[in-house]
Image (cartoon, rainbow, N blue to C red):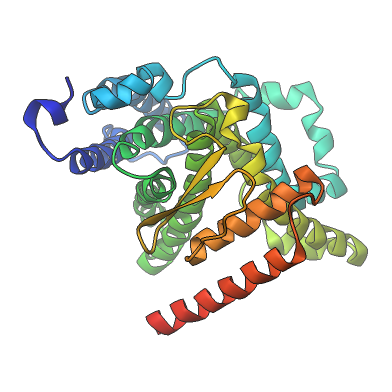
Length: 362
């Protein structure tokens, strides 16, 4: 029996409080060891490995206490955490391919500079696994963060929030959890303003990535899906746009073009490549024959049938989703169901809503 059923308290409030507790517990586990050593010192890294390992071990038992009977009736604890065999192969390769497309620009830079040749050397990978900083950044950090912030938290949020709402709410805690780096930066000699600016930037891009990662988890129903995406992103790092100027003029054009192409393809392929049917996912998402799109700013739900014959979309968020779904669907169906008038009407309506939102806030 869950705490909700035992004490008859509000399920949504308890689930959110449990997620907040997990967030602070994860960060606190990193600082349970008092030390003046830097975060990159081997002793600090080993101690934090132990701390987050204990956190990962205890988190599922903690989360299980807050699962309702209705949640567990859809899937047992392991399935709720994304640990299942059905659909695991596409859950590994499809998100990895999708994330690589998003990094098409940086990958082009690596190809032109010849860095990719380094990855073909076995000695590179052998030496990397002996580097604790590399292991932390590429393995332990993604593993522990995805386990706590996606596998454990998202099922809790889905007990009271619509899938797309949970996708955007959960990552806020993930972003807040990265603010602890601000204290380490100040300890390293950075001024308060500088440390705050760096941490705010980290909060922004970690929250955005967290939303993408949560979306992968909810759509695929697999823990491994956001894990491989997180590992790949940590390996690539945040794109260094200043490096583009170091290439020849024609190469710069190619790099910039691939940055834009990669983002465009990622937007178009995000929906079809995360189709829950591919991963046999019936845990967190409606069947694709009836796509459920929550409209965050008006708190209402619009339903679009599988062939998109109904266009009752009245929010900016939903119209963006509708436009991307239509374009992605046109690629798969070879323009069978998409007409120019549909795109035109969608853009006009979207533009009108953007103006309305601007007038509302300004």
